[in-house]
Length: 546
Image (cartoon, rainbow, N blue to C red; front, side, top):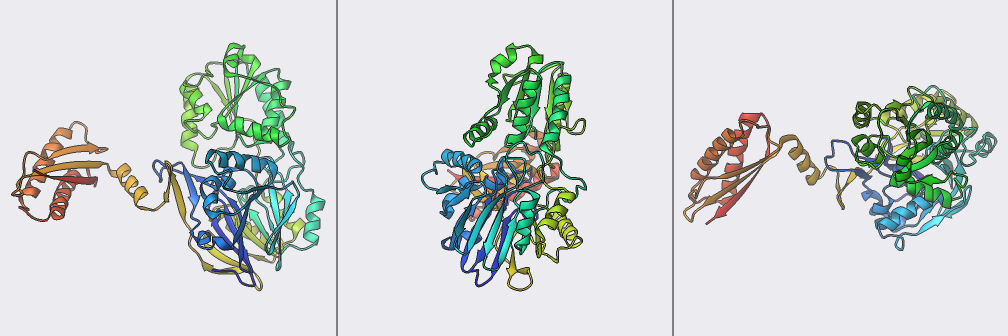
């Protein structure tokens, strides 16, 4: 598919799901990509941490791809760059803070000299073929959140990225109502808009409002205080620095991602008034009431600093009288992992405070009042919800249509949308899907490797070794090794019966074809396992001729 005299949109990730954002705009033979992120795996992908969008569609058309423009530095918008951008071979465009995070990722993968990274000033503009881009700063839970105002021959697109409205953002200077109204006055063809918090009837709230809640919690604590938050939330880090100073507590950081964010933030002109940090040893030597620790791991990640503190394997030790403050929202799907960490702390007498007990977190995404304000200011002809599950995007389409937007298009990953000319509509469906990072290898998420691993995880595995002589007769007893088969006390009895049935399968075949023999033995052992356990394990058969 090569775009003609038309304006096209194609999501390869982030539509019909929250995460893994990858959006394409096409016009007059050329494509541009907005964001290239990851999502995080769940138990459906055993052994996998990161999931990427399948870029087969644009890889086949890479000669027509002009560049990748990044809205902000969250992992679901930039996380796939070090794995996929090199293959695409196009330049990247980002503002300074986001570029600093990207640079670190490229350096880790040895791609700094391979991938061109262009730094655009806040509010800056540049052109790529038939597209003109201008960064429009918006508040979000990370420094330098930006919308993109995209000029095209068919009208202007306002691509929000992730955003909220915040009169006191603490970090950065978001576009004002007047500036956004001016954009609307000049005409907006399509608003491509974040749908994450569409079900929230209230505004998300200001970052400044969180300071008072955190101050109250920290002042009330009698021992050490550990605050966990999203490392990328530079405004929250500034708040925590202010709270530590106001409460007379020395500040300590625990987590590699916090160190990285702090370094990039300071290099980009933020956090220069941040209090000096102490190391872990001093944090443990000082009286508990004089220390505050900021830690990663609020989503229950076992290898993060907070999880290790809960297990007692981190140099910072917590116990009776200490407090852990969860200054973050619980991401759906992480409930079990977070509960495991919280239960471990509870067992040792650590008190915990979450957003349910105190006003210590605000979202970075717009609730309904903020969405309605943006609709009124921009007055787009078309609303196209993105960054949400289908229920979120459908709800935002209804909200927009009910408040004056003439037309809405609800699409999902792979849907090819023609925005102009004519009526905006889905005109086709293109290749899309998921890739997984398995160790150092990128694989199809629904390929043979992951399917085999699921079967292993669900059913277990049996290895069978059978030796036969030159006449095709069994030479010795078949040997079995079991992994993950639900047999405890009956294990030896099962092995004995399975050996007999494997031997019978060999005896039934004589000097027949080796593959046929292997299949007879495999089926015999699996039938035996199913009889004993109700499971259908993977059975691997080794034939040894002696």
